[in-house]
Length: 120
Image (cartoon, rainbow, N blue to C red; front, side):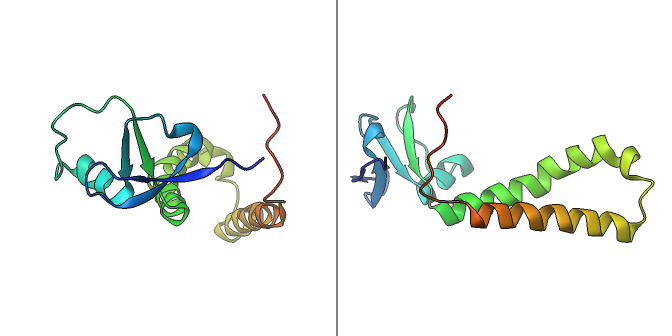
């Protein structure tokens, strides 16, 4: 079942942003641009923010996720598995990594976007 999306205004710039109806009760809503400005210290809310809904466009979310994984997650994983994979040549390692990534991408792309997540 798809959740209804409503339009709300960014508390800081007044821009219309999307909000899941289940989050409309949250008092503060913020666009992704203003959220970045808050994190950078360019915008200083006059009051503390207890709860905030941030509208992050999916393309920005994916870009940020990829950047974060590249900068933070992959080095940690590589450090853990480096000794185990040291027996592979660079070519074998590249082939194994490409094959694994390609298979994951195909699995992701061929998935049913309408398929619901199982309840936990």
